Image (cartoon, rainbow, N blue to C red; front, side, top):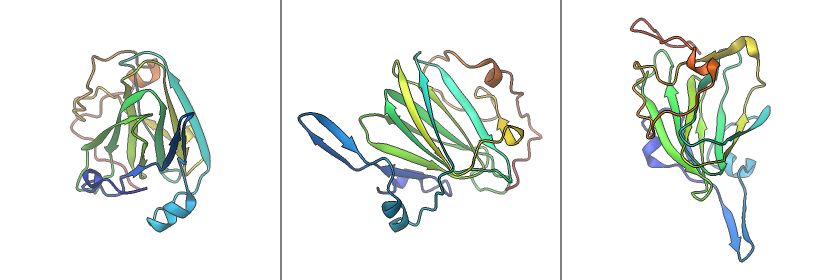
Length: 185
């Protein structure tokens, strides 16, 4: 796994190349290796692993996070299809506050992105029947869940496709407005 230089401006974002083996049958990949993470000084205690399947191109999931004391790191991997993946910095005192990091994740690129605490995460599906794998450093706690509207103009996320399906829950998140001060970690 190696750090992608484009993520360096966002403190804590890491783009990781997934090692894989290929032969006439297909591929075998090692999505996560504790040894490789240790070498790269990545601390990710696994508390939960989630999987999502999204069928429709243009669909958006996000923007989601958990608040302190259950703020979490997430290791995000696309295992089928492709997404425009977004990590939105909501850390109050960050130099990249309200800016976002984006990357295309797809099953062929063999990449994952590690998102630190204080970032909301979401994605737009670029290929039909896309599947994502999420590794979390905290258990899900509904009372600490936070969501932000993925179409909020304050974030100015440049989704690459026309907006498709968004869950009712995600679309009903209020816009943050000019007075949003960010999250304390």
